[in-house]
Length: 470
Ligand code: GLU
View 1 (cartoon, helix red, strand yellow):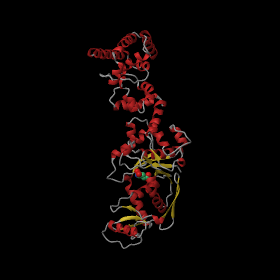
View 2 (cartoon, helix red, strand yellow):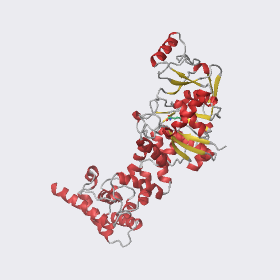
View 3 (spheres, helix red, strand yellow):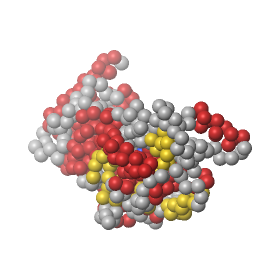
View 4 (cartoon, helix red, strand yellow):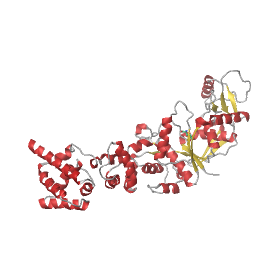
């Protein structure tokens, strides 16, 4: 039998980082074991499910490169099958019609509450057959009255729940539509899911699902319930804490490798190793090594991982992601250095690709103003001579390379008997518009000579104007 896992999101929003981590663990476990990974869209909540959300979830999965072997399956396309299974449960005596109104059920709960008992439906219709005519009814599962359900959870360990704690849950609503626990059971059964990896917010559903599976004579999958991700205040990670959508992380300038690596470590560890390539994750990951306790989301660590990948992945590859941000920031990169060269010089200077795009604009676009503070400090009358000399030396260069440019800057400083900074800083502000850039020789070498010379002229004009005003 093929080991089969699934990711079963409800399409009611974007792909949340918590969902992405569940998907990742599920995907890793399948990959590691040469198994199948199913994508199943649980879209039975017709009011809250949207196509935009289905697209957003699939975009997030694709961006993270989590590929599925089967699907996407859509639960809304399987209503006939659910109906069939509901009929089967009715026929085998594992389910029954319940004609109680919601008020009646509420009264039962009230009564139980008053007696200090567990609030639940009291089984009024469980064994009756005196059905009224033309009255709406729901279908309930006949949960066993005695015994325990034992879950050998791969993350949480053994969990024992007494059947006395469990309700006869509704499996079909009065309009005939199936409920969540029924659809999940039928799908996990039909899709031959061997391992259910999901958030531990579903743990209370698991004994109900196991009982239905047993009633159907189906194999019971292994369960692995992953603890929640918390925000910095110890509460479940949500929008209040910042970005929670996977695509927001793309927009904010993270590499998919960084987010995946960060997420794999958030709730799982292998010794004290922090960096895992995809291949290593697949090789080393195991559900049984997942933490039992919830993990806190730590943006600083994600940034650290992102910096690691920006610096160590092939520049050509990082450049593809940088291109997305250049485009996002309307920077036309047709004329200027290759993005891969930009990655090489900027990767260790930024936290994100978004920032990398922001600080690389000057390679491609002229500016009409210098950064005010930098200009005030470095484009002063004393900078005129160094800029003029360095300009004439640069314009005389036949070979435009970082080595020759480096020599020119050195020679200028020597000739004028000033420190390197007295040449370098005005030159930097002139060419990049601001006081920060990678080393100047490399930066200039990445730009066209005429562009560099024109920007030095602009700085000289700025200084002249300043002098005139003084
Ligand atoms: N559709 C459920 C959710 O998005 C997941 C159900 C499951 O994994 O069993 O929370």
